[in-house]
Image 1: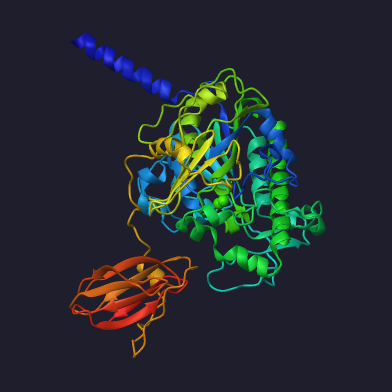
Image 2 (image 1 turned 180 degrees about the horizontal axis):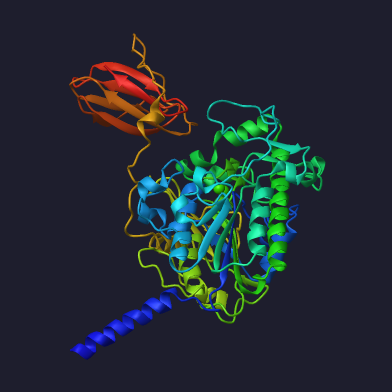
Amino acid sequence: MLMNSLLKVCFTLCLLIAGTALSAATPNVLFIAVDDLNDWIGSLGGHPQTKTPNFERLAKSGVLFTNAYCAAASCNPSRTAIFSGRPPHRSGLYQNMQKMREVMPEAELLPRYFSRHGYWSAGSGKMLHYVIDPPSWNDYFPDKAKDDPFPHTFYPKQRPVNLPRAGDWQYVETDWAALEVSDEEFGGDWSVTKWIGEQLGRAHEKPFFLACGLYRPHEPWFVPKKYFEPFPLETIQTGPGVQEGDLDDVPPLGQKLGRNRYFAHIQAHGQWKKGIQAYLASIHFADAMLGRVLDALETSPHRDNTIVVLWSDHGWHLGEKEHWQKFTGWRACARVPLMVRVPRGAAGLPEGTQAGSVCSRPVSLVDLFATLTELCGLPAKTDIESRSLVPLLRDPAAAWPHAALTHLDDPGNYALSTERWRYIHYRDGGEELYDIQTDPHEWTNLASKPEHAEKLAEMRLLAPKEIVPVHESQPGINTFVAELELAPLIGAEPPNSKADGQRVTLLFQNHRQTTTKLVWLDQTGARHAYGEVKGASRRLMKTYSGHTWLLLDENDKPLGHIVAPEKPARIKIQ
Ligand SMILES: [Ca+2]
Ligand SMILES: [Ca+2]
């Protein structure tokens, strides 16, 4: 009995020592994020004019994944999934406006997990969605205390420079320009990579987890002029994925998602090619910044003992499917660059990666958490849903019977990717199916073709069985400062809903003692009951700007109507 207990104590102690003592087999990690970069890098072949020698240099030195997908098609849920190891359908964080720490207050993020296991964790630039989350890091540049991941960046005084403002719906940073400044004067990613280079160049007592967040090619596409020079406007080609009428075979919700207002606005102002030029220039700039980091690592004492991982949080449309921006399930948005280089001697892969490897298995960025803990010999984190990619780093052709899941902002909207097939599902049951082997730009939706019914049924089965709904830590009351007056109905019908609005949340505050009924008018004016707001209570309602809501009292007598605005607003019902 006593002997047994002693053995148990010894065993536990051994485990503790194994868990904390770090040997030469414990590599450093250089974790590089690029914001809003689609497949327009040379090795992924997304655009023939792109200039990305440093992305190629890194890709050729390790494993390039050609079918890597983000866990969600926008910044916040994609990045939160990577850092927490929990995809949206496990965490409930699906949208950019959700606050990570409201949704998962206790989650131990990747850098914190590494520092608890003996690492020094530090970063600079955008890793999480516009926050640092200071408790997760040992150090952060420029200032961990301010919880602001961005160093000073040059902006033109007069804005917009090129793309006129069309209204409140337009993201204020959707604009582009060549700047008459040097890299150093521009600051931003130049300052981030300077600091990262300094960390790579010095001695460290502990192994490091060092995160470098490059913000370009995120909007605004303002970069120093020299990065525009290789792309004269008259030579600019539109992307190879653009096909006229491409949305014709896409279900209604997909069409709605595709035809957002940006692309029409950009075309109306003759800015399409200018936008493409500026995106190429912004990628070229990001490539140069990546080159600074790779150069610093080359001359660093840690060169031969550092894992390098590079990923982008999601892709980007520039006119494909009449769309400009992100938030879609198509490959242009869901597929991302991912490259991993592992040096010899790493605990989880002693032989290291083979330079010049290419892996076409479908993988998800949420898998990076488990991959890195295994590579570094740390205990696997148990409360995450992340599948280690080490078998593919060892053998890029290894069997991989898994699909990658990409969420959109609603749990009912998602995309599934296998090596050859892609399936998109919308919350109203709309579906798309593509064979990317013969149709890499997803032009021909096969979902309604009888000869593909079996494949469609097979893809449906890959969807997760258990789905956590959108976490209800809704935006605080301060989000709804704008008050919207209830318009009276005087002898006329309220207007029908308009179709092209953006998603917006409204707060109905019922100051009456009795129930108010909410009725949505569709585009034909047909009325649809949408629940109620009980007396003396309030209710949040997600809708689209331009949609009409009619409010009725408990006896169906009209109280008035509203047309949803562009920004969140509250409506007092009196
Ligand atoms: Ca992003
Ligand atoms: Ca099509």
